[in-house]
Every structure is written in structure tokens, then in C-alpha cells.
Image 1 (tube, rainbow, N blue to C red):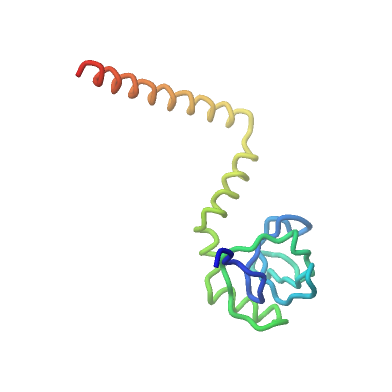
Image 2: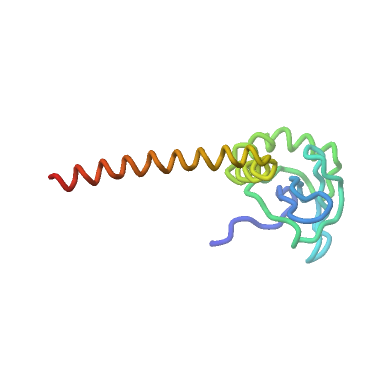
Length: 137
């Protein structure tokens, strides 16, 4: 089977649009073919109905029943240690890098530019030495 992540009760999803954008939620119930009832008590997202187009499914799943209450979702979230697993994922690290890059000041961007120039210069020096050694052999 090619597709591994399905919309199911207990699936952890990343909200890509709307008022809870950027937060993790758990699918509590599937309302119809377009919407799901989600809850994100540990990430600060309110219990609400969200269109599937605004959700991006993650690989994480918590064990809850359909229509589980907020307290049950919180206990299952903590038992599955979703916050730690999410923080270790490359997706979360990429989101953090994007947020960090967006919050740079002009001086920080200047320092970053100079650091890249220095790295590029060192790389070119090493490449030049290596190519010179290969030509001499």
C-alpha cells in the first residue's frame, strides 16, 4: 500500500490555515467528507471543526475513541508523548528554522551573509588545494 497516513480518529494533524494555523491538533471525529472535529488542548488550539484542506496529516496517532472529550485527548497526548516526538521531527525543525529566519533583524541578516561568504571562501580554498594535488599526480 502506497499511502500510509489516513484521516482517522486519533490522527495528529498540523493546521495549515485558519485561526489555529501552525498548531497541532488531534482528529476527534469525522463530521462528513469535508470536515473533521479537532481538538488541540496541548498546543493551544480550540476544539473546532476544520476542513480537511486546512489539515496536513502527520505520522503520529493517539489512541482515543470517537468524540473523546478534551481531558481524554490530553491524557492520550501526554501518554503518547506527542509534543516531544513532534519537536524531534524534521518537519518541526524546519518550521522552527523558518520562524527563526523570519525574525532576523537587518544586522542578523548581514552577519549571516558574512558567515556564508566566509564558509564559501574556505570551501573554495580546500577545493583549490585538492584539485592542485590531483593535477600534480
